[in-house]
Image 1 (cartoon, helix red, strand yellow):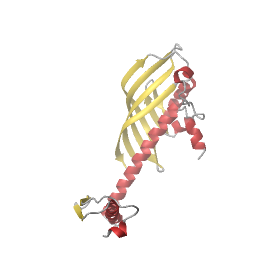
Image 2 (cartoon, rainbow, N blue to C red; image 1 turned 30 degrees about the horizontal axis):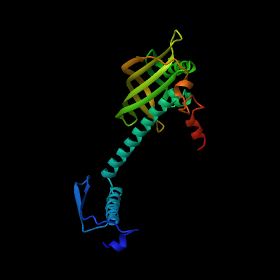
Image 3 (cartoon, one colour; image 1 turned 90 degrees about the horizontal axis):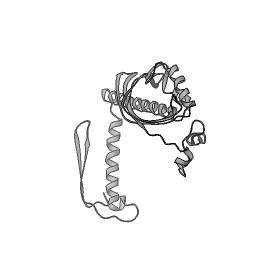
Image 4 (spheres, helix red, strand yellow; image 1 turned 45 degrees about the vertical axis):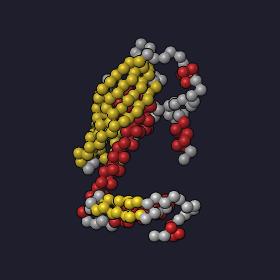
Amino acid sequence: MSSAALAIGPPFVPLPGRIKFTDVKFSFTYELLLVAPTAHEMVAVVKGVTDALTHRAGVWTGSDMTMSQEKITELLAKEAIRDSIYRYCRGVDRADEASLRGAYWPDATDQHGPYSGPVEGFFQWASGIFESGARNVHMVGNILIEFTASDEAVVETYFLALQRAPGRDDRVRQFLISGRYCDVFQQRGGEWRVFRRVVVYDWVDEQVAATEPEAIRFGPRLPVGVRFPDDPIYDLLRQR
């Protein structure tokens, strides 16, 4: 391997040494002795070996290919489930009913604090909260997805929520809430959505709500997040 054939641009400081590549599937180790290579030679060697291993992975047949495809399908399903969870968060935080509905199957159920029943009733309950001028911020963290069938999964999602809204006495109340969405997701027609949700509460902390108007509290920190369809995210989506 000559430096002239591989060098691109200005010369680099030689980096002699060895590189090992492990083929996990067959537990083979490839060891290359690099005699005073340049940095560009190093890149070329790494790319060459990586391409070779990638080609081997692409020509596996029989049971090996089937197992690989099953794993890919599982990873795609997990990503679709996560996307549904994120759509739910956008729906409740932006009062975006279409996004909220898109996270559930129409025949789903939701046990959600004071509400428990068909998801359509949950949508109506949430709509009343939206109309009160509530401000919500939902963040999700650990998401553990366990498949119980090819088209069903039990999903545990940790959440942290900041909620600020008028109470029954019209006094603004503010809460920091942490818990878990314990869900059964189902796949129908290639799409994953919530079929059953149980919201488990692990932490509730009532905070002192600020009394100043939002314009004063936020000051120059603009733009401020607002409801659908006026939030800046929807402007970006409309431009695409």
